[in-house]
Image 1 (tube, rainbow, N blue to C red):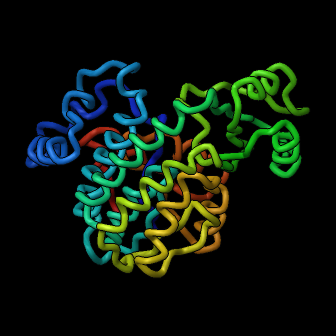
Image 2 (cartoon, rainbow, N blue to C red; image 1 turned 180 degrees about the horizontal axis):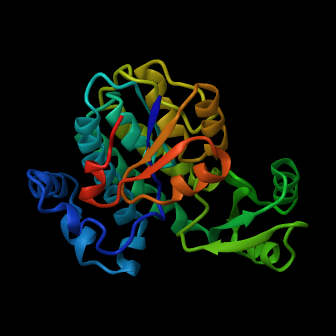
Length: 300
C-alpha cells in the first residue's frame, strides 16, 4: 500500500513553488485561492524570502496549497485503482484530509488561513518557542521535559522529539540537555501543539462550524494516536484539537508499518517526512515530490 504524506510548518523554502507554475491550471488555482484567503500564494511561493515565509500566517496556507496542488497531480499519476492512504504532519493533516475527501480543497485552505492567523496571535501573547531534542528514549526525554515545564509537542520517531514551552526553559534545556541528546532551537513563532494555543482552538472551532466534513474515501491516519479516522465528524474534531495537542507522527508511522505500507510519497515541499521514514520505516520505499519531473517517476 502507498501512503501519501503532507509535511508541516518549517518545510517551506524560498521559491519552491516556481517550478510548478508552468503546469496547466496551477497558476489559476493559486490565484483563486490567494484571492479567497487574502494571501498571495504565488508571490510567497516564488519570490518572497525566508523571513517572509517563516511567518505562521503565510507559511501554513502556503504549505497546504503546495500539498494540495502536488497531491492532486500524484493522485492523477497513480490512478484510481491504486490503494492509497493519507497522513499529514501538523498543518499537513489538513492537506491529507482534503486529499482523502473529508473536506474540499477550498475549505481546507480557508480553515488553515484562519488557523495560521489564530496561532500567530496566540504565540504573540507569551514568549514561547520550540526546540528539537535529538536522541534518547522517548519516555525518558518526555519525563525530563515535563519536569522543566516543557511539553513534548511533536513526537516524530527516529529519536526526535520537539519540546515546546517558555523560551527561558528552552534555553536551560539547550544548556543542560538530557543525557545522550542534543538540542536544536527551531525558528518558529511559539509553542505550537500545547496549551499555549488554546485561544487558536476556539477560533478554529468557530470557523469549522461552517464547513461540511465528509467520511474519508481512503484511510486517513490521525496525528492524535496514529489510528485511522472513519467519519467526518471525527476528522473535524481532530483537526481542531491538534492545534493544542501533541503531534504523534511516531504512532502514525507505527500504524503504517502494521498496515503493510510499502511506499511513502511526500508532497511538496518535501524532505522532512521522508527523512523520518528512512530512519523509522527502513523497509518502506520513499519518494519526494519537489519538482514536476518527480511526478513522472511514479510507477506502481
